[in-house]
Length: 157
Image (tube, rainbow, N blue to C red):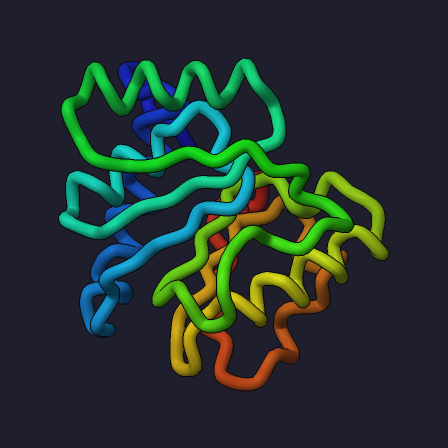
């Protein structure tokens, strides 16, 4: 729950910092953010020293991302790509970490399944996939072998 002096952006960064402790235990070098939105997470990961690429389908978010990347003076790339039902424009096993924040669960099951297939394809063996969603039951992630599941605030599992 946000405190009076916090913004949703502050809450989001706190979650990422918590995850960062887990991520640092792995040899993460290259990060892909699926549906990278306004670029906040791209900048966050770039500031941690990771090579960062975001894919986003909406022009207005790509523009915002590039503006934020330039303003923050970090190195990150944003690629326009229709996320759903399309093959990602990357080679197999290219990323150590794939991150998605509050986006994938807003789409149809067949679209989500295709995105998950692409995530699996471009994620290196032993890599990490971090997804933040509001409806955990939609993906039934509790049953995944090797997954770390944590339910946070009921509004933001």
